[in-house]
Length: 393
Image 1: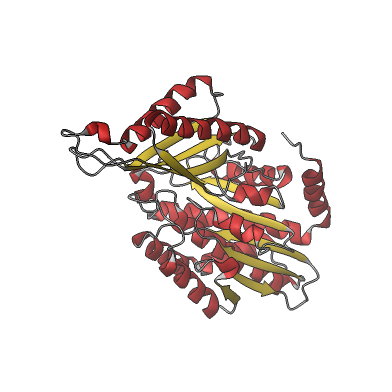
Image 2: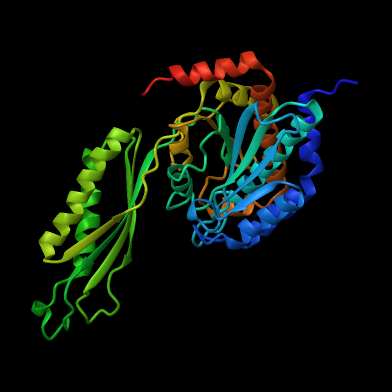
């Protein structure tokens, strides 16, 4: 009896549902920040080890990064498919972006494509990339620069949000850590002997607020003062700011970066402080493959109705991968509540049964798309053509 590839995928993921839910809830209950995802990485790799995958830990010099690989018994000459899992959390909010769900979605898709290769006798290789530090620092970018993704033909992942889309053009993003250094003094006896680093931080933040009037409507600047003094009667000798800037395109990010750096410098000049700026890795805009994205949206619409979301903001280090590889970053609806990412409501929603079931459906959807690339030569050729011909802007 012939069994459809879609049915094979559905059964494979359903068979693993209980294990995946256990992993998801364990990660959700123990949120770990960027590059600190020790327990999450351990849970995932131990599970993958026990399921018979070849697991490499600590890739690219990142303790919590890993790669799990399955090579078809028919040989590795076929397509080389890669999926991505994320598992870092947000400070104070925990898994307010649902990375516990992204973690298990990658595992689910890996399991599904392995089952297809085994049942259908299809040659090829499937990999799951465990990618830490998406919320900040950019683990995927480090892994990309170290060649971890080299040789993969297509990279895919899913991410929960409010609504669904297969055409997410994310914002380019750059995060900066700024410090001002002044001189402490008694704020009442001899304030003139001090150099106020707290004032430098305030001037910088106020100037950046004024700067917004001259920014394009789709540019974003936002940040917080993380240190501004420790005592009201001491002129602060140190202050610190964490700041992020976002634009639609890489060339615009370079322009905004220069303007913001001048603001930070001017605040130091105005107060007599010295200052230091440390830049994190820049996140590029995500560019989903048009053919893969349309299929994702069609399947999501068939299941949930409605229309794909357009004009969604935010950023991801997966964007850097999309500039190098054929890729899809499918966005799916968390739980039907309309909750927005990076809120406590989203954190709570990421642990619900509804979110689990929607995550598994999204994983099945993308696994079906990956399987079509694997077994349908004409479809794969159309995917490659769309990648070659995609516009630069």
